[in-house]
Amino acid sequence: MRKFNPQNIPTPKFGEFNLPNMPLDIEIGCGVGLHPIQYSMTNPDRYLVAIEHTTEKFEKFKRRFEKHGSPKNLLPVHENGISWVAHLLKKESVDRFFFLFPNPNPKPSQQNKRFHAMPFMEKVIECLKLDGTIHMATNESFYAEECLDFMTNVWKLKCVEHRMITKDDNFIGRTHFERKYLERGQEIHDFIFKKEKSI
Image 1 (spheres, rainbow, N blue to C red):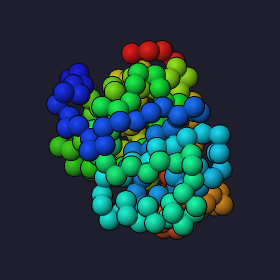
Image 2 (image 1 turned 135 degrees about the vertical axis):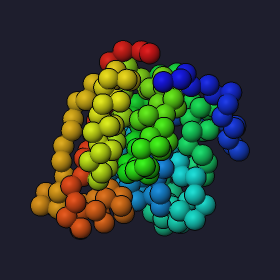
Image 3 (image 1 turned 180 degrees about the horizontal axis):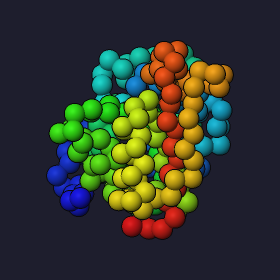
Image 4 (image 1 turned 120 degrees about the vertical axis):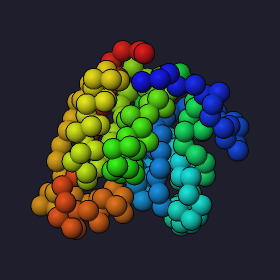
């Protein structure tokens, strides 16, 4: 695994972020914002930055955000998540990261484009506080197996939770993708990885 070099990453359009005076959580690739809205409303004592790069999805997220009263503990960001994290987050400043249903890039040649296999994960873990967590979810078994291997053996995080979610669990999906997969009868791999030492 090559080292992550932020100098190779374009700078974000909005070049400043002030840390909130509450636990900071980051969601990368939040889509149209279903999870961020739910999360911010059920966790009023936490601050979530929810990042979406795609313009169409972000516009839907922004409308949903405004429709729900623009929660003060939620910051919608229209940006490339890698650029934003690489240039605006400080070391050990984040309590939780969320990667919910990222593009699995199923072709073997695309492995290095999966978040867990990217040098960028080094920066994510660097930004994570000790005892902070990374939440990942996927409906793809191959992705789940590979993710578990990378996060524990390459990045040396501890898997503190790996649960299988099905439609029989009466679980309301956190994202539109998750709801769709559960309705189809697919199983969801839900992981929580914990940082127990600095890298």
